[in-house]
Length: 195
Image (cartoon, rainbow, N blue to C red; front, side, top):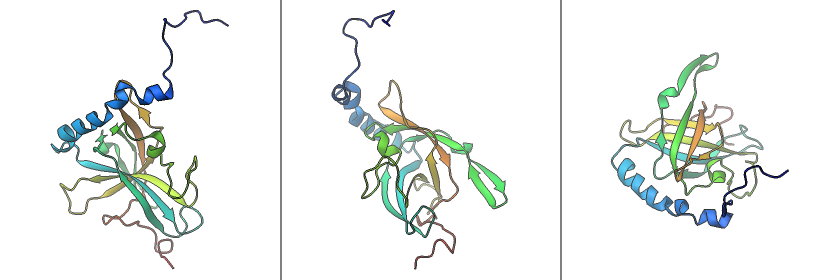
């Protein structure tokens, strides 16, 4: 079946090589430097955001104790739209945080696979294998409490390159198993003990 409206002369899709060499892609380092100078350095981004990979000592996630194996800071610090969207829900097991946030203006230098955690130490796979885990962590930048609260999130929707911009946006969902203020995993006494 022929197209009713053919594309204009010369219109076509960019090849991967052309996309990587596009003006928008080449502007990423400049935009990152400008964001650092105008938003981060002036103190307008009060939260640090990290991509964190952990490994459990057992044969699957949740078995044994968790140990952090890699932490990558998202720099320059991205914009977090609204942490007040996180609510505290009373449950039979206690009060648990729930809700979602949007993190935007994430440097375009990151790849989708990095943002969803597909890079795993000593692995090269299309999913995060057992006993590894991946999460995002949001931590106040130090202007408040001496040891700020660490809030753990997981990817809620696929990261999106923002049209007309040179950065990413992602929706994150709050999870309840935060690390302690000292950065160490908080696991139950029976699961968290290393033998």
